Length: 113
Image 1 (tube, rainbow, N blue to C red):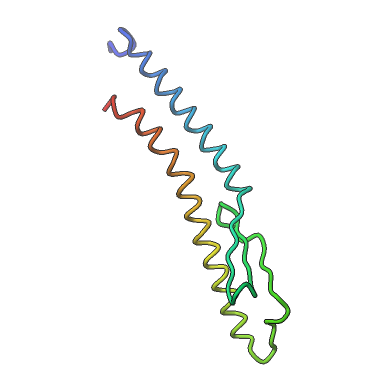
Image 2 (tube, rainbow, N blue to C red; image 1 turned 60 degrees about the vertical axis):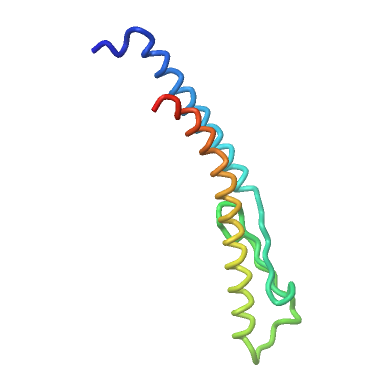
């Protein structure tokens, strides 16, 4: 019963503000990640794959010199390698950006636990 009295409301307001700030920062970071691009290549740049910071492949480019109808498997391997690397780079970028939010939010709550 007595939680609403004696300053308990101030802690609730402080926590609510921290949560709202964290949510705003997360939304901002999501927008940044959507706009961010990472590009990986394979075969000495013959195939490149570009991903958003949210892990979506947005572009694949293939140098016409690498297109050999007799060796489609090599081209498939190059595309797979470039796409895989782009997705890994995207995941690392996302972890860095999202991870930077957590210490601030969690750090602000440590004194209350």
